[in-house]
Length: 399
Image (cartoon, rainbow, N blue to C red; front, side, top):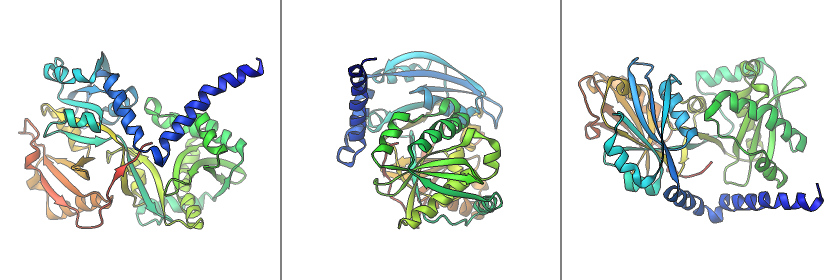
């Protein structure tokens, strides 16, 4: 290929990279959500009916979902453990949503709309929940194993004799991406994975924005993590396990990544670290794992799920009982828990539940009755508990 063809081929990528970098910079932080809003208004949305068996109750549940494939796949996995099928009913503009919801020809019990702050203002009804797609969190460094789970992780790290090294060698970034990051991401998240571009990663690496922490067992690198500086708190950007091997997971490679990273950040003079993004459901595996290190919610994405209950069949009740989540209420981050009978909750159980939510820094907890006799969800009847301890004021952050 002639040299000028190579240059010409690289220009679109260079422009795309420049625009992406500009949108990520603090000077243009306001522009990204604005562009997302404009795109959502002029673009069509996929609409699916997700039909499956709710695992805890064994009953059928049908969901009407508006949004992208990857987030729809996540909801299907979380709510049904993939024991479901989805039917596409087409692509529609967002202004068609009220008509489709009103007709609800498939008699769906739950409606989920993937939306942003502007469309939320248009479509959110009084009893709807607005759940951010992502939560960001931070933790004090070095990480202290205060819980049994994290103490067990640290023992495993020591027993496996894991060590770490930080490098800037370009060849190591290439190995990390193809032999650690991609295999682990795809194996863990499958069709729910949101994959980072190799070119974008290397662009940030060559501009001195990233370092690579490698977890070593003997002479072998078994895991790695990208760490980013210059965006406020130092950040765990991406991680991976070599070949997604279960043996390395049993050795404590994931825990070693977080633990050694926190030690390294402390050596660099930091008091806290950004531990990346998690889903807002407390039953999500990534959320559960990070919670063992006493993380605090510090932000949320500008996009979210608008969740609306139409009816309360047994399948939806079972789903709500086992799926506590974090939602936004008047600019504050709150927790939502659903129980069969509020009167059966003892003072001891109430204190335990509050402690579990409040340690994330949420402003409060709403506990909703969702009993056998209830045929609709009454949000006005919730028991509300305010967090009197430290509350983290969330802010909009993007992946």
